[in-house]
Length: 399
Ligand SMILES: [Zn+2]
Image 1 (cartoon, rainbow, N blue to C red):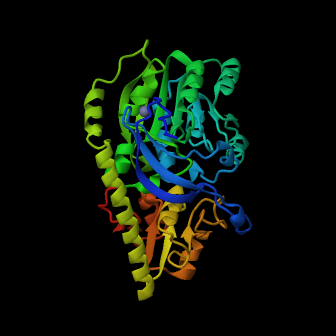
Image 2 (image 1 turned 90 degrees about the vertical axis):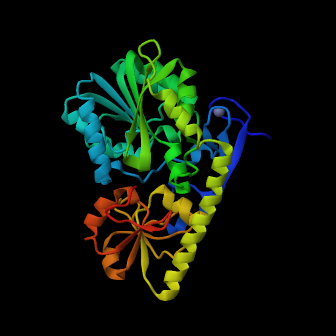
Image 3 (image 1 turned 180 degrees about the vertical axis):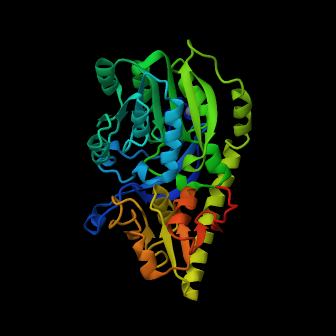
């Protein structure tokens, strides 16, 4: 059966990357749960029509999200990012934050006196925000949820969806729900990882099963055009290793950004099937190189551990079959992950006190975008390495 682009319906999808069988990257099992882990093929395709990049296999949503271990407020960098966004929204009458996590944006909005409502599907995470007095609806954002908010709160002047768009299995349905809730002159702010940065920086570790779509300016433009909406502004965002912030309005309320055609022309130099297949080959070379170096360090008796347990830890270790013999443990600051194991390869996730006990020489920093925070927390006492490509993270390393 030929595959079809879920954004535009074209059947001209071409595979350019195969990361093998992978577990769900955000399910951190306990030892008792090892036997229940499920694996799925992680293959990546490009649509030659709208330049959408999507996975070949869609894991049922029901298998995800009941529990979620990522707390945005644990990361100082993200907290500052959302405080700055809240400042920009300080004059807004009513903000809806879709995928509000533990209230990382709701908190500064509340301080500024902005009326805001979060929507968060994860039960345990939304409860943290509710317990803190941050108005949060525990739900998936769909048309029913949009109607419910419309009735209880009225239309939203701004809807924010940061790091949530990439997790959707049906972006068109999501936008239909946005369409219901957004005021006529309302603003939709989407922060989403930019596929071009992932390709340019050879970040295959940012593909995982929870994320079906990887967006380009081309595919976003095509997607929103189908709903009578235009991209009015495109800004780079440093968080999540190079995202874009799309400011989107109804076509009846605003004109598209002036530089959009130029930006699309640039990205087409990379988002073509030949260039993407080169990228796929390079990914295999990089993970092979990582495994060779880890084996070399092991035989030299040099001690290594990981820092951070983001989803990409799972993609990298499962693609490279890197288990505890090469990576005895990884440190993570989220109490929800500590005491659990990495998906698939079962690397223990521990607190930073383990570093003192084990005294490794080298830290493989999986949460590398937070290297400044990590360096501060760990007293700058180690050699800090980025996993892919395996290079030392110095003060000058561009991330
Ligand atoms: Zn398409």
